[in-house]
Image (cartoon, rainbow, N blue to C red; front, side, top):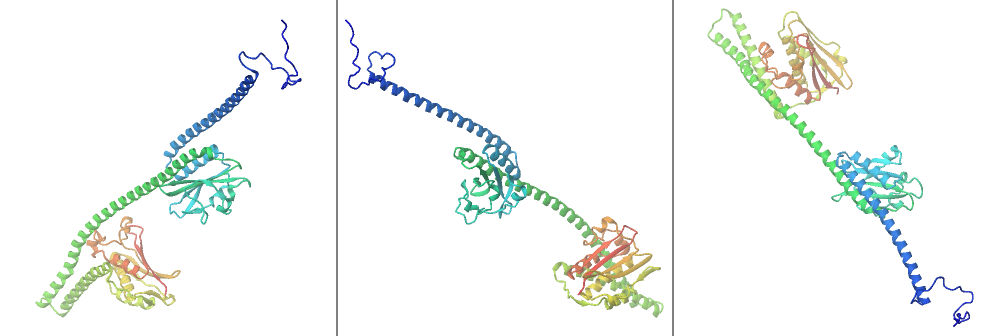
Length: 477
């Protein structure tokens, strides 16, 4: 029996439509076969989509793994970096190399906390970047900006201040703060190409921000600890010097008390001895009696000078010393000093030289009585310590001041003693004090008096046996 072919003009069939390719699976109708093909095509599209997503996820994972490796390496570097400038340099490199920043500046708060100072810059001329100091605590005053939140910067925020970071008109600026304990330690601003987004890098950015903020804070602590350590060392050294000075002062004080007791007892004994001799009539004639009285008077005057030195120092240290500054002509004052000092005893052959033409020297503002006291003290010392040669007074005009120098060819002062000579009781070191007498308070009192008169006193000597020059300066009226 011959099979009858399907009618090509059957309703629903197209005379030009080809027959389905391939045999129809057993048990399936042509409609079911079409549905199966549609499902297969849909499945292929899903597989293709999933494959693409897996590829993208693998790329993201690889990038995230790379970023985590970079952040771990950065963390190790920052942990070993105690300086804020080095932290800024490391962070800048990360933004440039890992986040594609065309420009970048890293700011950090300065020590005073008044401004943020640019510490590192990329893509910006150094001279330009160094000038971009921004105020603290808000680097952009008046802008509606959340300080502790990273964001894109609208041009209205910086009002042209950050234009050096915009290499092109399409450059977008991104703000990345470094906050620690609600304190904006610093921040970075990076310039990115138009269309560049950082959404996928937010987690890495957050980790980096925390690392950098902690490193800046640690750098502050490290610097503070270093400064405190240096301060402690300096204070310890100063305390050791102060203790040594106190021990030395205590030694000087003990020697001073012993010497002063001797210095006070000697003239007092002389006064009592000469007075007893006169009272008992143990003298041959009136001339010898007058000589005994004169020696008694000299001993009394010496005793009075010693007591005056002690009392003057006590007044100075208690703040009760009175100074009355007034204009004074040096010509009359020097004449008074000359009349007193000419009568002082001195070794034979020691010349006492005085300045001339003092009328040309302008008036000075001093306490005349105290300046006379200082000059007499200096001349008395020079005459006492000079065995031969000369003692000379030189007066010169300077710029806004007058200098009075008392120089001699006496015993001089050693280099070591010069650094201590204006300290209390220093002369009481047993040597010259016992040979020449004195309490060692004279120069200390002179120094205080000159400072109270807005002047100064200095000492120069080339060493023992080479003479000494003491120079006073007083302001011109």
